[in-house]
Length: 210
Image (cartoon, rainbow, N blue to C red; front, side, top):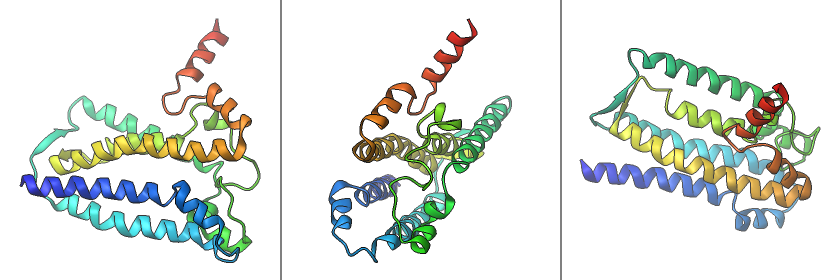
């Protein structure tokens, strides 16, 4: 059984590494040298690779036997539903600014453009939910990781821990690209708005209420 957990952990870590490599400076630098007609298809290819490698790994995790680490029950169910609700609001808030066509990679093919951000009407979003946290979808994913299941077995908890470590790393890598693309404007935004926990927004709201 220990070997299965080791393989499972290696599998999830390998998925995270692959996910990061596909958006690393080495790969993006190579992409910049590709012929222009090819570039609009890359987001769709990226999504297909991510999904095609995620689905079997998630399926293996689900069917791997393991004891219960914790279960949402009793009064803790309210905490779970609160986390699910917050995750939904964060996903919804982000989707109001992101162009889902760009997120899926379909609009790039239709327009022939491949922007860094998932929108074409602004350099990067700074209002709405993005005035509260810089990465609402990453935060929503963290909340969802620990609330989507009613019972967390050892395999599920192992996967959730690995992904919880990876998400801040992924957000940091994305921010490096955005800072390189938008320079001072994005670095100013970083100083004004928190990455995940909205303590800067709460502090400003508290001061404004005094």
